[in-house]
Image 1 (cartoon, rainbow over the protein chains, first blue to last red):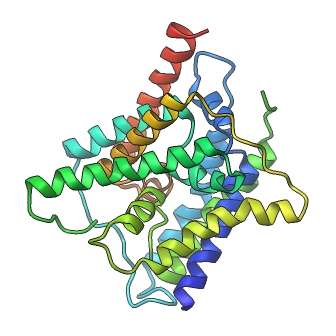
Image 2: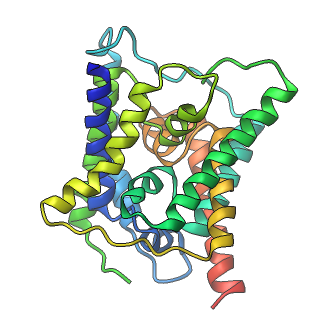
Image 3: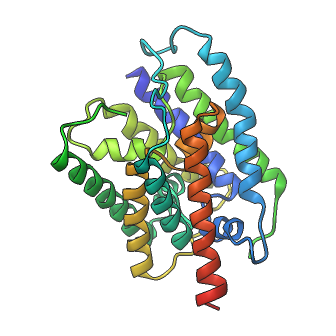
Length: 145
Length: 140
């Protein structure tokens, strides 16, 4: 139960950050991506500010043995640049550039009850499920990420 | 066109970072939203409680800010076909590439993960190309 409350609190703080920074507005994100137009540097500042907090934060946590409410840190352990990584990132970028929404802002925008945001999130779910189906139909279950 | 507000951008960015650090400090988990979202829907994945709670926290954030007087604007969305096509690409691509702007762009970059640096550079580049094409080559 405590990990569920903790996750809700972390999501609340993260979502407040996305909202206050303006990153839940697709027009602002597209303004950053539009380097040939009237460029909006907001996203760069948001990302830099987040990294200024997370980089030392993670460095400190790596020296701890365990998180406060769980038995171990689940640090990602995958290394190596492979084709799925680059192809997946490239396809994600195309979708992001078309709409101006990535997964976090899409979730936060569900609160606006916009029908198009719901459609976007359902499509995201179908896209993710399609990749899982494709991969699992071809190979045995890979190690969980 | 909304005006550029560097103070809100910096405060918001720092809060995003704080949320990421909190999830790792408390639960030992990476705040990668595409992965958390897809794992909630993945029948082969157990331990869904904290994932659902994190997403509910995201959705609750603008509602809470609304209570203290900060209205959330309705998002400017493109036509239905673009919305659905874009959503499919974002869902498929982030699942295949193992992350999005939060997982690779913030969490992975903060760890100086080479995978995340490559992924972030790649999705930034293709997104910029798509916007350049749609706004300056094909569209008005």
